[in-house]
Image (tube, rainbow, N blue to C red; front, side, top):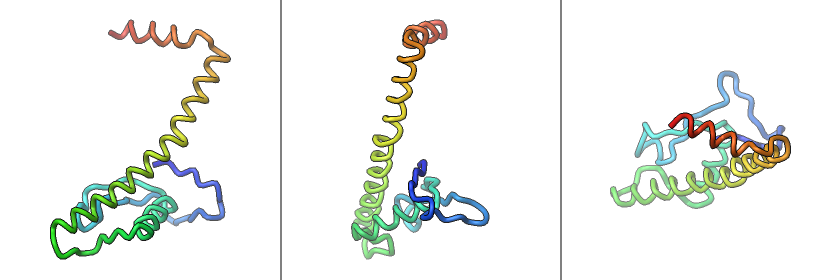
Length: 118
């Protein structure tokens, strides 16, 4: 996930790495399932879990563990989808507008290149 934190004072500057492994299903439940996040985004994801009341500590039954893990995963996927809608899609829209302005036939060029490869 790409960090676009506008408040530079809010960023943490670690000594060795700016990335941490986020466990979207919970470290206890699926330790190998990870996603790299910067320290700020990782902290935000955990804050969302706390706000939503997701408890990834030991649960008394497997069904309760599954519920908490799925709730945590759903929140993470929502964050990812929100980021994609906000940043990735608008960035591509900006690129398309730039290409339309400076290279009006870019679509035909791309189609021709794709046809050559098939």
